[in-house]
Image 1 (cartoon, one colour):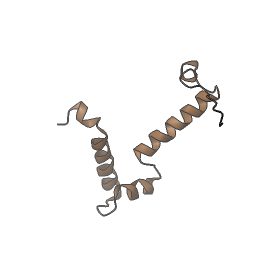
Image 2 (cartoon, one colour):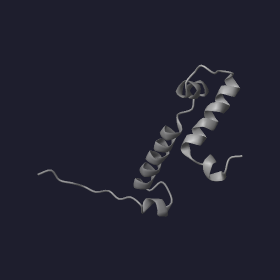
Image 3 (tube, rainbow, N blue to C red):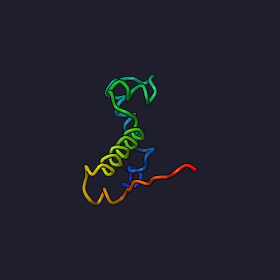
Image 4 (spheres, rainbow, N blue to C red):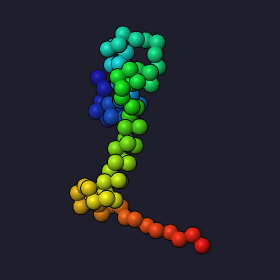
Length: 80
């Protein structure tokens, strides 16, 4: 039986997703990225980067909660 901390490590989560996709598609030959492409989902890392970029955009443009908006600020730099 896996411990809760073991399940939450990124490597174990990727392995669980990969095994699930292999079972669903009955495919033992494709690599992880090919399996993700078949279901139209990005890799976990890409999904997290996408989420972070959206949060930063919304925060800088006042489209999210004040808590998030206060985390970021515009800085201007002049080139001399």
